[in-house]
Length: 151
Image (cartoon, rainbow, N blue to C red; front, side, top):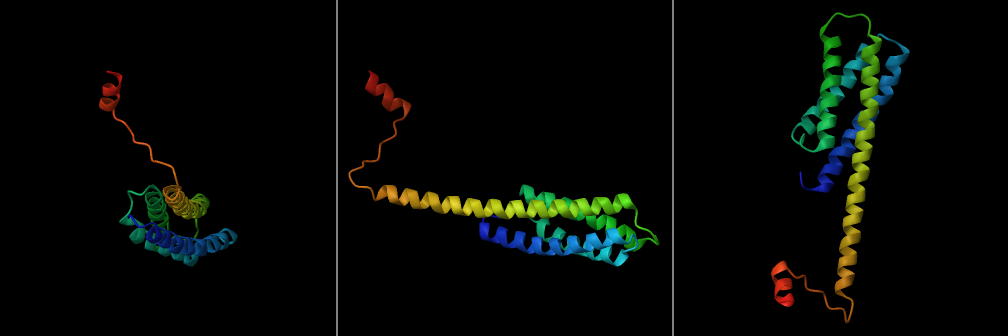
């Protein structure tokens, strides 16, 4: 995906979905039989699988994709089995994964914003250099040109 604005839009949308699940994850901690909340978290992360699956070669997208797949697997396990209790290590894993997902998404958004700002600043500086008077751009010499000068 070449367009930074498209990347940012996908990341912002994903962040919104994941932040919703953070609140639910906190509710699950309070009661260890919150199957509906866990199913909803799984569904939200399942939606991210589709969004990020096409761009898994972008590091952050690949990381979110893997976290989403793992969370979805845990949620599906509880949805498809007749468990009446959520195991603490499963809950801890889901909560840690949700938290990490938020960190990755926020860092990715900030990086894209910084890249955009830096690129804009660079283009501005480059443009202003061309407007300077009486400054002649230097010519870069290759090794062959230097050899001719030395001979």
